[in-house]
Image (cartoon, rainbow, N blue to C red):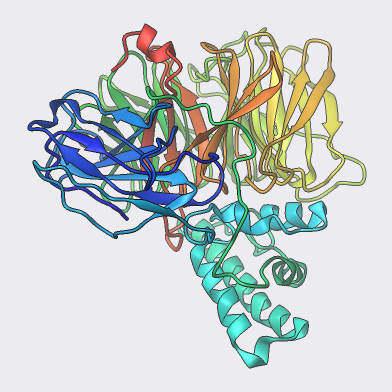
Length: 586
């Protein structure tokens, strides 16, 4: 990694202006000037030619205020600039196509130049999805993503290390021996899954349930197919679509103290705060986006709940619990939680996953004041009247030929507040429920059972957008006329798109990915897709919110299971398209 200490002024970086696809690299840094009030620089190659849309990251010095790290992008002349008042720290850069010549350079008042050279091997810098491009059968890729990428990227570096070990061991050269070796790993993953879901005691899913590798045998066969050959190198990876970043794009990353199993992060109203859910404990964390200061809000009681899904509302931040039976709300003014119990005495635990939200991704009720939720444990949609505490739920009718392992997942409310739409992750289907008649209505199935619809969102004109996790696609369905508008391939079909977020300001759809270290933007007017790259590896994303007040995107690196390595941060992103600037955001 190229870094710069004691950042004293503007910065000069050297790289080659080739295609924006290829090998992700850490680039060299030159600094000059006196004060860091206005850090500027340039990225070019060994011959002085500029590189556009390169990432330049400033990691603050210990004790400095602000974001843990801030990333900007170069313009067509290879120039970049940080905002006035940027903190001191270390500076590095990254772009697809090159590697740095020197490993580290200290910064000071004198210019420091680091040059870059072309490098063909993308290992260590290309995303995990790059290693899955060789699947001849798309169904195998879908099955592997669905089985393995719920908790961690596939193949993560330690998975690649294990695959290399099998390559280097004479006893594991046959397919049968490799299957046995991978079977042991899948069994271990199932064990880890059961431990994760059993942390609170009581109900524990089986090893073939949510977030597990399932039956070890077929998954082991998939791993044998996917992870052979030189795991020390990967070549020819590209974004597959144009980058949408500009010289005004800014990504701010905020790390919080351990255990920091950040599941989701959301904005709230016209404030400078983000709220993050720590699924490993009973806390919601407030992050001051100017100072970087954090404050914990602890959920009362002795039982482990683990806040999971966060949705902002007019009366606070609503949270579902990772462990069953509770829906809660944090009042930011009183800094107190209110909890609602959802299970009936003697009944099966209620596993709340998503709650009803509108096109602004804010909590919304039906016409009777009820908040609706998806119950992942019981294949049901349920409701809560927060005024009276009354609650109930209704089982989703079985889908002929696809009974079992339904896992109702995402949920969204229609603009007329008369319907909730839900999707079933395990059987690749979605449907609607009428909150007036209290009856299920529409039901649609995707062709592949491993399409994997996860989180979804509704536009303000009633179009439902679904992220197809296994399929690596985006589905658009018009709920007003009940017609599929299209199913669109994402540039990287192994990217594992986790969610969709309708952007009411830009009238586009944002698609965070779990396996490709990027965010996609889909424009329904042109049906075009753009790419916003992230500044580090293992950028496992889940949800994304649009702050209606600032125009910023809010998301998080959600590497939540204790055994999973990778960054755990909240992110605040200005796409650099002028929307945030027009709203006076900083």
